[in-house]
Figure 1: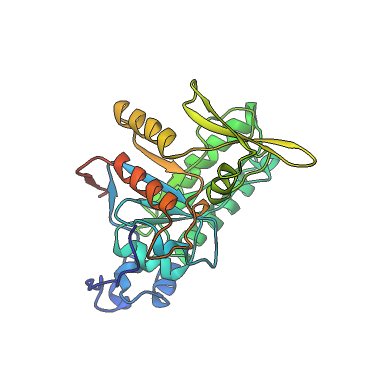
Figure 2: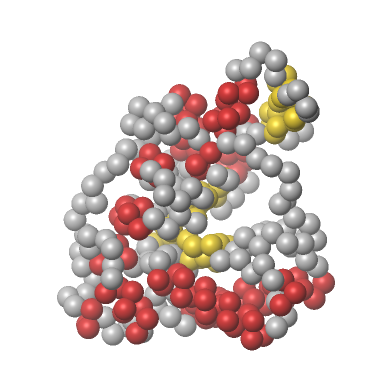
Length: 289
């Protein structure tokens, strides 16, 4: 686990904001209110890793991020804590905002797409972010699905028009199928650990998916919970390496137990150690210019 560390010394990008002629008015205004110790930390991360470790961090107003491994993560999504932003950028870790297009019936409306795209650009700039995660969990098909593809193409064109957002990430659901995973309920891994210690719970292992599950009995119902642990994640990480995949990620990084703080809980430390093993021994960074 990587405890909180000071930012260190970073060079200032411009002698004055007035000399940053490449920024438009909105970008210059945002940079004038940079919350970080150095202006460079409010600019997008200038390099991108050859292997991505993408973490969703949905817990706002939380100190969990103080105990993330910033030597392993490459992108953190959704958490817009400005102290996190400064610390992440100091370690070349990207921050991406969330902006969904949930009114999917409007996807084929050019004006609606244009408004959404401009709002997305504004959110990236105002939060000094490195991109956007579009997490629209609504089933769609046919023309609507094609219009979502058009939306992403138009977004890319808009972001490319600005120096600030030229290399911004735009991540979207990969499947493009008429289905949604917004069903059922979830529990954090720390809660799973409590269930595992219950002598009345039944533990199982699925050989097809190489994943564990457990049966939890309550007075009113029996619950089946599927989850990942160090063993199952090790199998998935190994597959990522064997198939030369672009990276790995998880939903979500705040599901672990950070109550130990600088003396991490054993299960939490083990999960971070397993994640670190997923990364190539010598991470390679590629220029984005």
